[in-house]
Length: 104
Image (cartoon, rainbow, N blue to C red):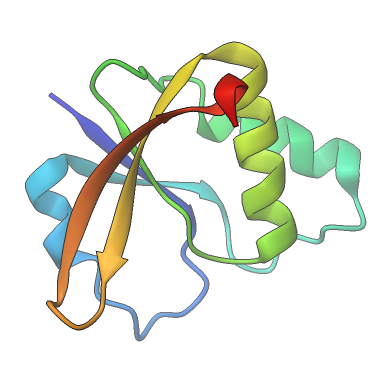
């Protein structure tokens, strides 16, 4: 089964229900984690992504922009291709995207 890695579930008002059609929701970094404690943050990201499989799993880039950048940097070091769920606000659904980080 696929997983959907929500980078940071920052706002409890956001409904990630539509992302469930792509897999089980998993939070990478808990709300309130400080970007100033980089060792702890990197450790948390590594733990949160431990079961990430780029052939089947997706990332939802939501939360603190610094943390989002760190997650993509870490994933880019480990994998060539990453699947992302982009929220199309007007249509109110997620659009799956796949791209190669190393070709950016």
